[in-house]
View 1 (cartoon, rainbow, N blue to C red):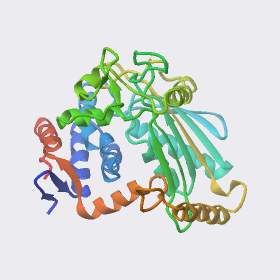
View 2: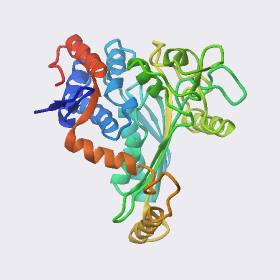
View 3: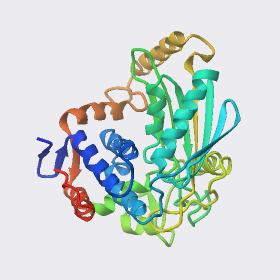
Length: 354
C-alpha cells in the first residue's frame, strides 16, 4: 500500500509522493531529471515537517511552468571572476534547479580551494532553504545559504510591505553525532504557514501579522492582505535587509521590493540567492573538526533543561527525527491538501495520489 488514512489525515509513502510530483512536473514541461530534482526537494520539505514549502506549493509551480512564466528548460550561464567565486544566471528557471546547480558549483570550488561562493540571479522561489545546506553537509562541507523574497514585511517602523520573509540557512557536518542544520526566517511566521491556515480554515496566533489597516489579526485571509511581522522587532527587520543585500543587491537580482510575488504577478520573479561551501579541514584536519563538532553536540545535549523541557536539541534535530519517522510511516496530508493534488492530477492527466 502507498497510503494509510485516519480521521484527520492520510499518510502517503514518500516514494509515491515523489513519483506523483515528478509526473506532474513532466506534464508541465520539465525534463525527467529536472522534474525528479524538484519533486525530491518538495518531498524532503514535507518529510522534515516544513510542509509550507512542500507538495502544497506544487500547483503554483505547475501553473507558472504551464503558462511560460517560468522556463521549463532554462539555459543557465556561469561566470567565474575568481577561482572561488561565481555568478549564476538562472535564466528564469525554477529556484530548485538554480539552487542545486549553484550549491554544486560552490562545493566543487571548496573541494579544490577550501571555499566556494556562488551568487544567483534570475531565479525563482527555491523552496526549503535547508535543501541546499543538506546538499553540502551530506557532501561533507560547511554551508551558508541566503535568499531574498517578494515583499511581505515592513521595515521596522513602517506599515507597508517592503522586505521579504527571506530565510537564512546554515549547516555543518559532525562525526558520530547529528549535524548542525539551521533554517530560519526573519519573520515571526512564514507566509506559507498563514496560507496553510487559510486553506484549513484555522485562525493564526496573534502577533504573527497585521491586516491591511495595520491592525493585529488572527484571520489568515486578512493577514494575507496585510503584512507579517519580524522576529525581535528591529532585529528581524535588520536580518531581512541583510538577506536582501546578499541575495539581491550583491547578485544583481531584484531587491528593495523588486522581487515579484509568484502568487500575484505574472512577470519573472528575479529572486536572488547566495550559496557558500567551506571545507571543514581548512584550518585543521577534517577528523579534528568533526571530533570537535561531536563535543559541541554532546555538550548541548548534556545541558541542564529548563522547566517544561525534557531534552536540549541541536538546530535541525527535530526535523531529522521527523524525517526518519515519516520515511517509515508516511507523510501526513490533510483532506484539503489532497483535494488540491487531485485537482492537479485531473488537470494534467496523471494518476491521482493515493
